[in-house]
Length: 251
Image (tube, rainbow, N blue to C red; front, side):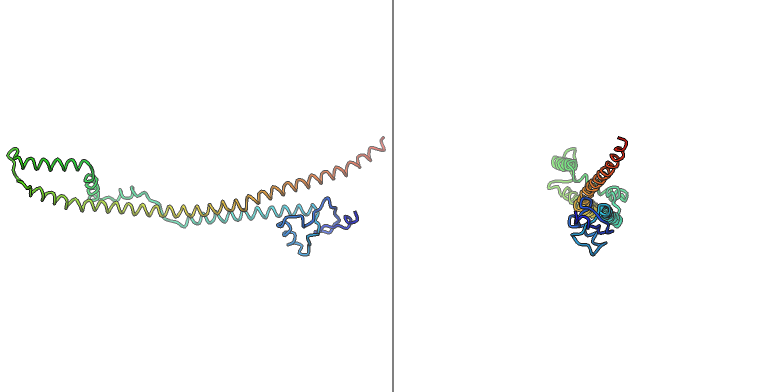
C-alpha cells in the first residue's frame, strides 16, 4: 500500500493506483514508442494512468488508420497514373482493315479465298479433263489443242503466274492484320501487367498491414471497453456506500 501511495502518472504526476494504471513495459512496442516520443525520460518501469493511456491508444489507432489510408491512396494514384500514361487506343483490326480496303485488295482476297477451296479444285479438274477429252477424242469436231496439249500447258502456266502474285497480295494483307493484332495484344498485355502489379501490391498491403492493423485496433477496442467497464464498476462502488449511509439515519 505504501508503494501505491507513491505511484504517480508519467504524464501529469498525479497519484494513481495499480488497478487503474499500467506499466510501460506491459504496453505494445508501438504504443510504448509513442509515449517515449513525448516523454524521452520515461523508463519501462514508469506507470501511466488509464485516462492518459486511453488518449495514447486512440492516437495510435488514428495513426494506423491514416497510414493505411495514405498507402492505399498512393497505390490507387499509381494505378491511375499507369492507366493514363498508356495513351494507345485499342482498335478493332477487322473493322479498320475493312474500311481501308481497295477494289484490288478485295479481288485479291476473293481470288485467294476461292483458290484455296475444294470448289476451285473440282472446277479446275473438270476443266482439265474436259479439255483433254474434247481435244483427244475430237468431240463435236473440235480440235484446237492436239496431244500433248501444248496450249493447255501454256494456259496452266499463265494461270499459275497470275494467281501466285494475287495470292501473295492477300497474304501480305494477312501479315498486316497479324501485325496489328500483335501490336494490340502487346499493349493490352502491357496494361494488364501494370494493373496486376499494382493490384498485387494492394493485396500485399492489405495482407501485411491493414489486416494486422484491424486486428490490433479490435484488440485496443476490447481493452478500452474493459477499462470503461472497470471505471463504471468503481463508480458504482463509490456511490453504494454513500447511498447506504444516507439510508441509515432514516432507519
